[in-house]
Amino acid sequence: MTARVYRGTDRNLSFLARRLRAGELVAVPSETVYGLAANALDARACRRIFAAKGRPRTDPLIVHIHSLRQLAEVAVPNPAALRLARKFWPGPLTLVLPKRPVVPAEVTAGLPSVAVRMPSHPLFRRLLQRCGLPLAAPSANAFGYVSPTTAAHVHHGLGKKIRHILDGGATPIGLESTIVDLRDPAHPRLLRPGAITRAQLNRALGTRLGAKTTVGRESEAQVAPGSLKRHYSPHAQVVLHPRLAQRAIAGGAPDEAWLFLKRPAGGKRRNVFWLDRSGTHAAVARRLFAQLRELDHAGFSVIHVELARGTGLAEAINDRLRRAAAQ
Ligand code: TXA
Ligand code: MG
Image 1 (cartoon, rainbow, N blue to C red):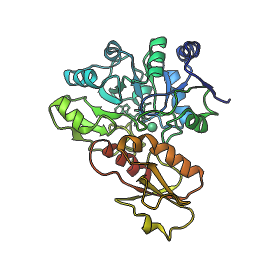
Image 2: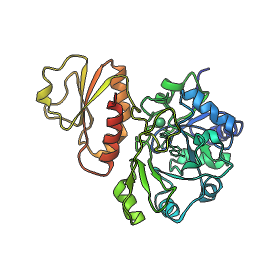
Image 3: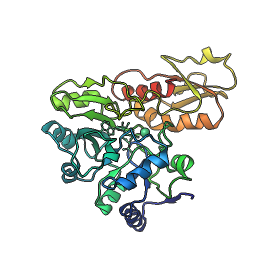
Image 4: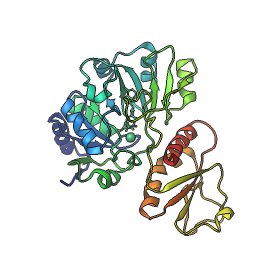
């Protein structure tokens, strides 16, 4: 099979909503990265997600919803969760909460908790509304590879495994959602940093988020999401540097790329790249995964990258860089 790419017209959205209701998979744009969606209440449909991605069944899926009414259908919210939901939804924040029985074990990898997010991307929202179902969706990439931020990335990785890709252009944030564990509302924990920052969450909750304490193993359902150490990795070896200087790379081998966050003094050379002219964190986040893919396809076997400095979105950028660099 070869996937077809659909523009977000009314007719296409109605068609794709029917495909989802019939148990098929549809790749969808979100404000973070592209997701591979299925009816979250249909165990068979959700098993197809794992098969298409080559994802271990022990890695649970995020359930995407359109309304707070749907939140209460799939999860048991608490006051802290409702506070974050009112402040940051729709948006790039996922909440881990006790699950309701309607959510099949396939979605949660057998865990008694479910991860829920209300996305803000207008096409995803319209699709959710039209199909009237919660949609389970992990990132729409082959397991372990860099998450897709364009429809072309999805087609490149999964074009032979799925039939439908909804094209919403390049995703505006470019990194996966922030995940907060609120199973115990007295001890909220940050499981994955993202565009909703630790400081924003601490302020909204009036507490300090704890960090995840466990490192996931593929053999067990993950309590801490996305915690498999090597994840989001390009094929090339990624080497991290606190700082890169253009003059330090003069002797680099031809198969080594040097990736700066902002345009370096000295400008373009064959193996010198940058993520954004001025290096703002939002622009760096938006470009990061696409750039790693491009350097992979260009055949570089080593990518030297600079870490982001500061707090906020820098925490999420550096988290993804460290995962890409993990052996
Ligand atoms: O931005 C995003 O979060 C994107 C878009 C499509 O929404 N989704 C995404 O999903 O990045 P992905 O592939 O990272 O998978 C969801 C993560 C997994 O790493 C999983 O371990 C964690 O969320 N997760 C899901 N359900 C969980 C649960 N019940 N408890 C703990 N972690 C969970
Ligand atoms: Mg993923």
